Amino acid sequence: MQSELRLRIVSGIVLAVVTLGATWVGGIVFELLSVAIAMLVYYEWSTITRLAERDFQGNAFGWLAQAVIAALILFGGADVTLVVLAAFVVAAALWVFFQGGSWWLPGGIIYAGLTGISLSAIRGDSDIGLIAMVFIFAVVWATDILAYFTGRTIGGPKLAPRISPGKTWSGAIGGTVSGVIAGVAVFMTHFSLDDARIPLLALALSVSSQVGDLFESYIKRRFGVKDSSKLIPGHGGVMDRVDGLVFACFAALLIALVQVMSAGGQSAPMGAILLAP
Image (cartoon, rainbow, N blue to C red; front, side):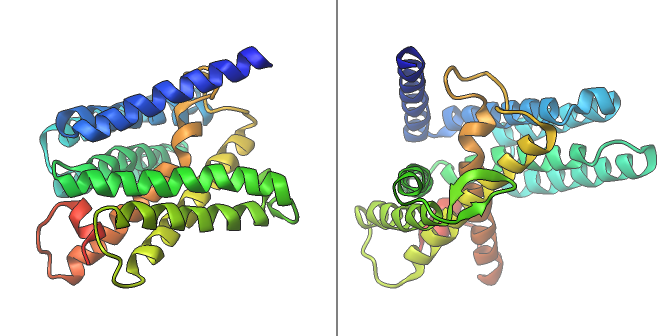
């Protein structure tokens, strides 16, 4: 047990150093990290849902979609990449509808594709993109860690017993409060807190991260697997580690896009749009 815990700690430290280092450097380094995460997420998604066994051609199309999205993340813009992702999802849905494949195919394309797009778009190349990404990390990690310890300490009614029996309402509430505090703390190291928008943003991202955690738990329970893979020693798979982060980034990207549309489509880095007053 001690050796397993030691392995888990070492792996966690390595992951944190790589992630934070790439976030700090930004640019092509973080884009490559985003692409790598997206590709591994699709690999685990297709493995869990047995897409290759159910629909080999459909799964090959899914990999093609991820390759094109990865290239656009590295060499294109977020707007174009989102449009291309939508086209691939529609094409996959039509394929399933007419060929009788698995609906997990378009689900995997949009889940993995949005993972890479949202991560790279929020970080971008600007300094405020770095702050926005650290803001999201703080919210998600504080939510995850404190939800675990609060739930273990207080216990009480289960949050979603059929999906994840270990999660409690006390843990969810404790994690949310901690996530909001952590997000506000990161924001206040760079800006003044003039209104309730940032706490509300942190609240939305904290809740989204917990929904993402439950979503991945549902998929694993649906297909009877414990971990999404064994790629990360002591931790399971990539999806096991980024499930909450992925949904928080989805929510952050959606919020930023809504703000862009409400402002008449004015162009600006996603991180700036997300955190700007």
